Length: 247
Image 1 (cartoon, one colour):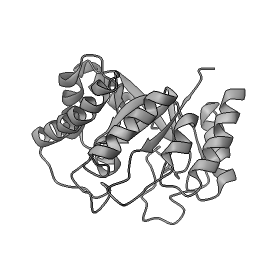
Image 2: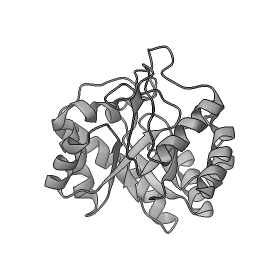
Image 3: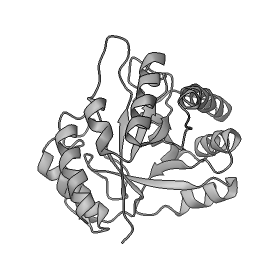
């Protein structure tokens, strides 16, 4: 069984506003998805987050978003494909500057929030993000949602020459096709730590778990995300890290 990686969205504080407990969470994850200033994060937060990831040996991923600080990047903003390529490159460049100063580099790209979800439905936007990854560095992977069927994503990425990483979520409910249940739906975000842990371990083992309707769903993922803004995230990360290490 291929060992699944553990990732977390981090670096999402902004000025005097604090989000998550990155100092305690960072030692528990394999990959840190760092905000790049468009949905959260500021220059000092980015610099400190990169330093924290380097200290604990976590791989650094850029977490670019639509320009939506007020909405935390969770609102769709109508952008042309050209604009999306440019805004992803802009955010990649900002994070890479801090990585370079710390003696490391951006290892992958994971779009955030509404942009992440839009890639599931819009080929033009998906190709726009692929173009940004390809232009930034040959072989830079793009992390996308693991669905019940990812042939579309694989075909588009192969045509663009961009490797993919498939991601599943420990703390989100799923629709039958493997898309994330919209946050407006009741039960879309799991709050119970035991349920989050159980879903995470089933995904890690490649076993079916239940979707939002109670029916079985099976996903094949390279990395497993626990959201940093979930109140249960730190407790779950500790238990999940120990459980994954024992598999």
